[in-house]
Image (tube, rainbow, N blue to C red; front, side, top):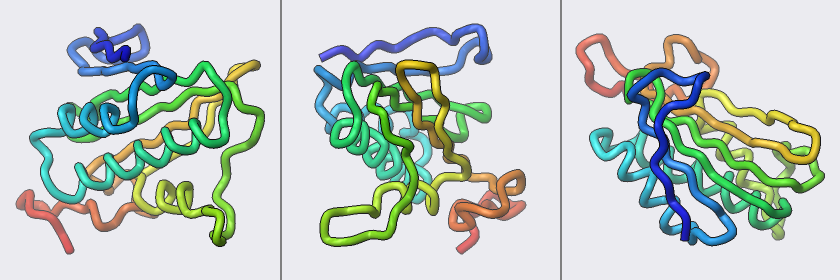
Amino acid sequence: MSIQPQDATDDEQPGVRTHSCDLETTPIRHVRRLVRDLLGDHPGVLLDDAVLVTDELVSNAIQHGRGPRSCRLTLIRDGRGLRAEVTDSGPGEPRPRTPDDTGGRGLLLVARLANAWGVHWFGDHKTVWAELVPDTREHKRRASHLSVAPDGSRLV
């Protein structure tokens, strides 16, 4: 199993906590634990949603993608949120589909729970990413259940 905490790269801020893992050797339960460890100070909806979204991205890469597969988890917004990135070399375009008996709910959940998500293509591989933050003022169209009131309490 390969799970490696990393220092920030050039496109990140210094001091940002990042974990990367090789999905060929890392069980998905360990990826879930990494999310919980990174967001340990954020109990409740953000943590639960981040675990679910990351689980869906990793599961999709394992089921539909090709190796090598990797996952990178980064705390964002001064440690208040999470960016999950899952990379594989599978050919298909990840997009939500109509659920049926074989599945199709994963990216619908990601689209509903994440503040933003998308795909970056890099020639022979792609990275599917999602960001979850508790403050949705900048992302009003998604994740209203993560809104925070001015006094810091969670809006329901």
